Length: 384
Image (cartoon, rainbow, N blue to C red; front, top):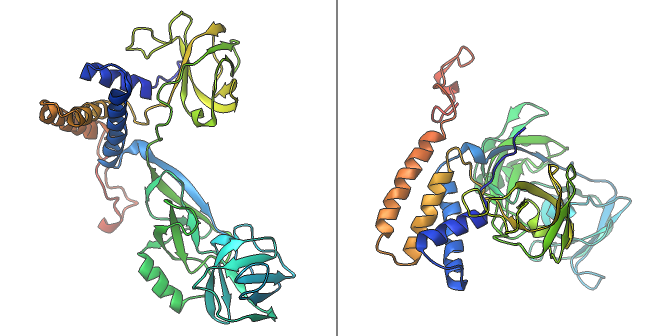
């Protein structure tokens, strides 16, 4: 079976340097890499590309009310300390809310299996005696780091589609329905614990471990490794282990592309002067001198040169040409070249062709008997 071929950050970097007629020195590399990063964001945001969709799942945490609590506002081991007796705080307690006597208090940290602290400004203003009943629940769940947007979230256990609303509607509904139950609405909001991350907030707060499925539109794979080729490698044919000599591989290279050559020069892409012999995706980096790839190499290599570079996370059947033209336009603009407006026009035309190519069906969708009402017919273009 033929192996897939990838465009890497090195390939694009080399291509733009040729376009600019520039050497690979410090300032030129900075301009090129900024152009590449800007182009990746720009192209990805131009359309809801089919390539960036995937199915994802959120599994909620059941509410918890085992045992009783005691609250110490100040003077204890921790400030605003809530101690649990005859129970164990859930492992994700820091994302939760504790309800005591009808009031909600947000958790700050889980200090141990029996101790949590409450957030300043949202905690009780006085001590609470031991033996007090409570209920803990979690209404907010971290979305994947590459989350961009999502379609409707569906509860698989009940075959129920929830309604997407804004955060204000969720909070207003919470006042009317404060007790944990089966959620029927959600909102996208900032994550309460992790900075620069998004989360989904449910209401009512889940009372059980529900399976929530949705289609995720992700962001492109980030670029971190542009070009690494220090040292040499040894590979036994039919295996997935690569052993390095004089290398300093890191975990940041996991997911990158490693290329090896049977020749004497450092390998390039297929459009370069020294095309690689084989390339594979790096699975794990065990140490600075050992890594594994996702599929075995065919041939054996001894003390050979190699190159590691991140793959460009665009789909070459539709998006690649538009990405290249966007890189050229960005680089021309950053270098204040006179041909920047021309390059912009070329990019816009390449983008138009890419949008057409992303129509993945051979024919438009047709109304079938399953769609009994016009409002049930799927929205969107005829993309199959």
